Length: 461
Image (tube, rainbow, N blue to C red; front, side, top):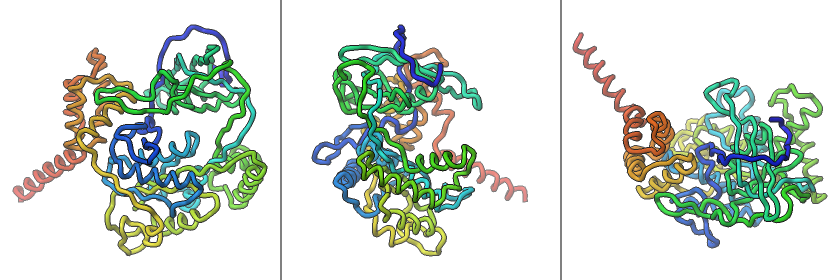
């Protein structure tokens, strides 16, 4: 299929796009109008304290207020810190940039640490531009994605095109789209029942919500939960002229400016302060002319304790600038040394930076929350699982970790398919559980084996 959008009336089979990404089902923080967390909503379960804390920060940001330098999430691994940061970005808007990096990424780079952080900051700041364009708009009623092996890894399937049928109250049309748009459909992800817009010229896709009648809730084995906001099916023709908004990041504009003047072959480290200053001036002019607005996104830095003192100093200065994203840091360390110094500090963060952060905690989920999370994840992976198998996975999540339990789901599905079964049953969970062990089990195993070797070495003396 070509990269351009084509329209032709065809008969299609109903095949839903698959979700990708461990947090792709998160659509917000799941709060009510009083900023109180709903038990299960927007793909999130439990963690009410942290979700409400994040919601208050989002509320302040929407009022044009900046609560310090941002939010620090502290809690054990696998307690949903990344999911909460994604939820903050989705609460700010579906087109709001979300950038996730790890503190350990600053080491071993070919560019300076501060340049890497600067690029991350500018990728997390969007420019929302208003234009009158031709768009395709409607509810997705049929979707077929064409795939083939990835040329650099034949075991991975990538989209090469798609047939998507959009319906309004007055018309139904099928679009044939190329590789880039098809992969965007998978990335969002777009499913049957979603109401979307596709820019006829660029192929940019905006996910508006779930169509009325498709339901704002989903029902799994653990009950109903809210998954998306509901919208009416659009009226009029599928293709129409609309004033739409699309969002690009400051880093996108930086790179486009370099390519315009230097060609396609350049290195990322060549983004200079002079180029960025010109881009900032250009964006300011657009804002003054009411042609665009600035969209502060979310910069999420996991393993914040891995950043060094130079990185923290840079972040502290950068977040004081006029163009700055919402910073969300995460750590599972208590007291540790600030890298680059011999000073011990809470969470490995310098005190002057720590004093400017609001801190919220995440907790280990309860058994009921583990089951609900696994139930939502099964739906996200289009995985049919029996109640008994879900109970078994919940036992594993409670005894070991939620992350380990969720990672066993796809291998269990593969085993079920290999055995000719359409539903994951306890026997499939038992099979993968016997093959894949938890971190604590692997550590204990090596300790025992090394103890045997030590005993043997001592005996041979």
